[in-house]
Image (cartoon, rainbow, N blue to C red):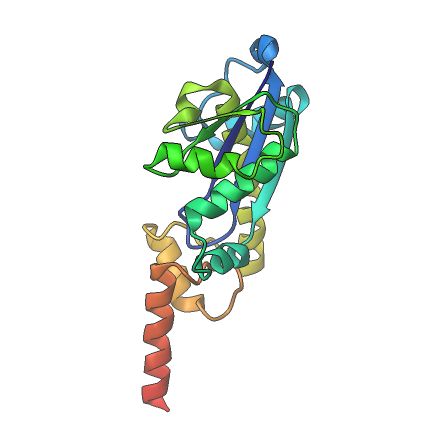
Length: 214
């Protein structure tokens, strides 16, 4: 039986993409995945990067990078939201590999509804789809996917920092460095998630200020 895991990285940041990945492997070969593989949040960046190529070698895999524009488009669509975007992308990933069972780390409190939403878009209806909270902690195959997603997200953010010409921190709204960067540069770059309240508050305030000055 082929078992697969799906996970995301960068769901919450106001800067940069969200990355999703799937890993699949024969269940009998799970031991081929290094014992060092665990939820990416429990590993240092170097540890994750050291495991990246190993995971790609032993697992069938696919990585999808969702740009800030794609995320904003989904959130501006009345029929979509972030959970549905993640579910839709999960189905694309599942359809890209051979798997008998797929484990999802559910972003939704309504786990069964999320699982059914994803399964409705899976081509092979025989595939067993399982959704759980904290699946990246409980299943090595999901942890492997989380590492592929997180490393890819880190590299994408590195590229954006080169474009920006400065360090804007983690990209999360709670990061003071990120917030200060948005304050100065909200109208200068295309890599902000413009539907995020952090961005909207700064942009609207500065637009109103500009109208008053005019």
